[in-house]
Amino acid sequence: NKSILFVNRPKGKPSLDDFKIVEEDDPQPGDGELLLKSVYISVDPYLRGRMRDEESYIPPFELNEPLESMVVAEVMESKNEHFKRGEYVSGMLKWKEYQTSRGNGLNKVDKNAAALSAYLGILGLTGLTAYLALEKIGNLKEGETLLVSGAAGAVGSVAGQIGKLRGCKVVGIAGSDEKIDHIEFKFGYDEGINYKSTDNMAEAIHTACPDGVDVYFDNVGGEILDAALANINKDARIINCGAIASYNEKKIPTGPRPEGALIKNTALMQGFLIRDHAKDFGLAIRQLATWLQEGKLRYDETVVEGFENTPQAFLDLFDGKNQGKMVVKV
Ligand code: NDP
Figure 1 (spheres, rainbow, N blue to C red):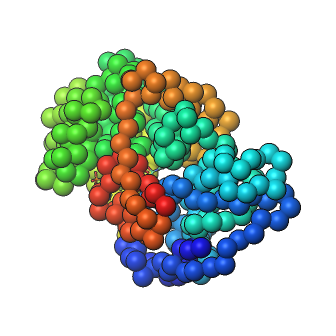
Figure 2: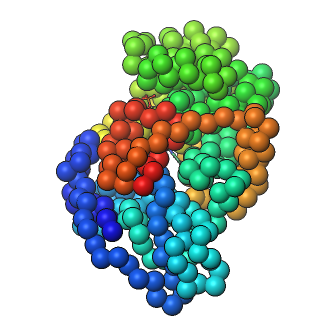
Figure 3: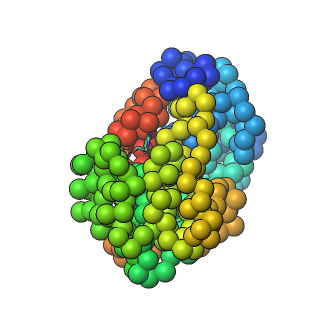
């Protein structure tokens, strides 16, 4: 039974040296417990934040302890009346091949209703983030322009498609020409901007969004946020969902810089945190699942095979190697 420990707090970009794979005894479930076998592990940019020894909305990882993230697992044995052997669950679990749990915080998932990995993406926290951030902050109206960064990623690709379903013009920002072609072709983005080959992002956004930006779904922060703010309309809404551009910075740069943009446009910029919206998950999942069934919503996954490749899959997020949700098949 392998387990992945967090052994070093990275300064700057994390590396494989920050992780250690160890062999442990097989766990035995006690009374009221389950034995779980990990099937899919989610790797997410926000885990970088938990590697810092800082107070946040979620406690930092402890050194020499296993990392954790959302995992889909199979119940191998149950001494808990609420779960049966052979059922599948999702929840915040450790990076272990096998582990025991008392069942707290685990949700059963139906393997016949959707692919098991989908419960970590389109029907999991990233799909929910796209949907609920747009519901709670975006307030999209037909005919408006939605700009999405991280547009080919797990959250971004869903946000863009919801923008189209709401009758908006949708422009996406991503890090390669292949990703731009892909989001236009598969997800219906009206236009895309490759930020890695564009010198002047503010100008490129202006060209792609000649009527200005009404809603900016920000997954990256940094200079792309500055460029987006230079193009916002009166009463624009800016969803501050993520800032991956600065997660590996040793010193967080100050910003956003065009502060006047918010004032003169009386724009709203609001942080969004998915874990504050648990009471809305049921309705949101039903809506996402309905759109999926109707073929109105599509999704991408990058599936990395092998438990021991979990750290590398996490590192690859920062090099944009994923298209859609990055998951590890154990
Ligand atoms: P993604 O699937 O979007 O993967 C990360 C992507 O970020 C990469 O594929 C890469 O794409 C892009 N990226 C990496 N480095 C940079 C950089 N320096 N500048 C710009 N883009 C970069 O991840 P998620 O969809 O899971 O998450 C997207 C964002 O949403 C993250 O910032 C995450 O922290 C945040 N988030 C926030 C939540 C909340 O509750 N607030 C919940 C879930 C996610 P490319 O090739 O285009 O560069």
